[in-house]
Length: 249
Image (cartoon, rainbow, N blue to C red):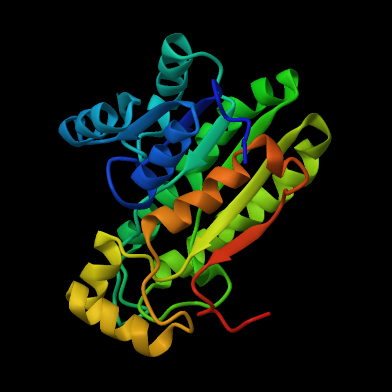
């Protein structure tokens, strides 16, 4: 299937590893001109060289740097037509009341304000050109809160509501806004939270209906479709990629 992404300019944040890198790789394989960001110059330049993308150093919590980032991408590649907002997860704790105010503030800045700052910058151009794709990498926690993830449970739900609101406003202009909700995908974070890869795989075999962890590539394929011309009538959605783990309807 031709996804119609050849030559499209895509920006993928948090793309030096894990899900962000997987999505950037999938978009580049479809012929998109991909810009990737990370706060680590070494990691993002290595990723860009390996997948055929353009590297940009950007710290998601630095909201004031967003105009420079967007201008840099557009100067080097052209107007941004696809935005994939991927951010790392905030700290975890078994005590839902055990997070200091500073961690609440940083999680809000990282998970809500940072992606919205880029969205606000790129959406006007998308609307003018009559085409745009925005995809947020969220979490299955917005459907069923996950123990230990108080900050993620709270702030990812806030972003989901904001994007759902935006989707209704821009749909007539050819701009779609969707979120993807990963469950247990084989990334460094799920392994760290589980204690080891073996423990993560053992838990997935017991608890996930599909009987295993999902792969980054499986997740990235869903994201690539939502970024494509083929997904023009899909907007305002939150799509689970979790092997059937989430029980809510």
